[in-house]
Length: 144
Ligand SMILES: [Cu+2]
Image 1 (cartoon, protein in one colour):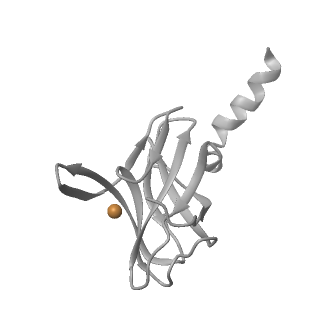
Image 2 (cartoon, rainbow, N blue to C red):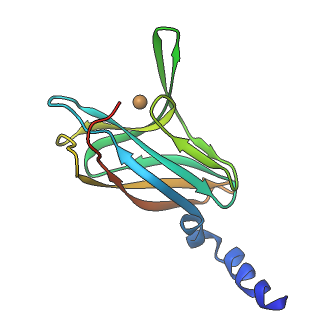
């Protein structure tokens, strides 16, 4: 099946630019905010074709983006910042309320239902090569 070998080889040779193409982002959304709220969680399903790490995010809508993990410890909510989020090959990693998420910090304007928020994600492969992926967060009507 030599016909399939060439595209694969090409993909390996151009691993840099191909990094971003090897990441599938689905269901990307951010939580709408109430007046005065400076932060908002952003959520999505990420599937990488090979082992990568999500190491950073950025958006013109906020001063900074942090990668967070939260969980409930009884009544107490525990949230901490992560340096990276592992994206094992072929596994869908869900950033979702109550778990892993990206946190938009220092919002420049409230996020309202129907807004579209551009965002970039930076991934890093095992060799340290970084690649940036552009996505759009939709903002749905408020939900729990
Ligand atoms: Cu958070």
